[in-house]
Image 1: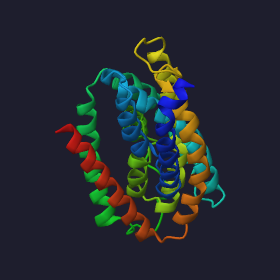
Image 2: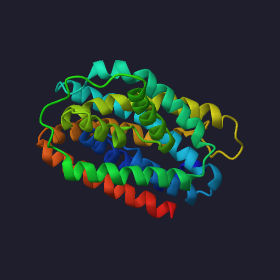
Image 3: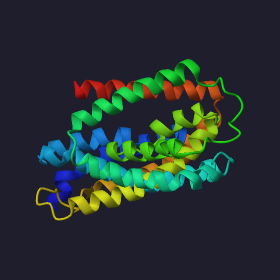
Length: 273
């Protein structure tokens, strides 16, 4: 009873966060982590959780919620024929490896370094979407092959896992740059989120197992209370975001994603500097 009273106000905040995150997952192909991580970090701070592990808990819990969000969002986009399963099969293994590596590396880098890297990349990608998005009307006939291109999905998985996001922040601009239409890029990105979140969350469970500083209801660095509150809300909201996305034309969706990336990058750079 005491635990419920202590966490009660935060439960409402987590539910609201889940709704917003789910809408963003369906609309923009992102896993919602860019909303979940900062809210959970702040919430855990009000509970007096050790700041040394707060971001680890927020990132890990975000990845766990993205597992379910990605399934819901990817299914909604698949029903509209906008998921490239061939590319997912080709890139899947590299995304998985990148996600595991990113989760491992995140525990060894200062959070400000991660924020600086993420913010810098997001600025470039956001400007690209705003300035050039929607001007590639024909999808690429074939994704480039070779070892160099395989570093792209590895990097997407690694950076996304490090930041507790579903991959859309990186994969949507990359796929549009390679010639995919924005709707197909968003739908495929939703599937990538599943390939990132599963190994990433498992890695954080393992690396955080038995840490005495963890708050109640934790499985490694994954907080089960946050998962229980956020996941259902994201599942319900993600299909609504997908419906909104398919009512927008390519230019509108590119503009929305570009603005989103610039807002995210601004927050990250402010935190890092």
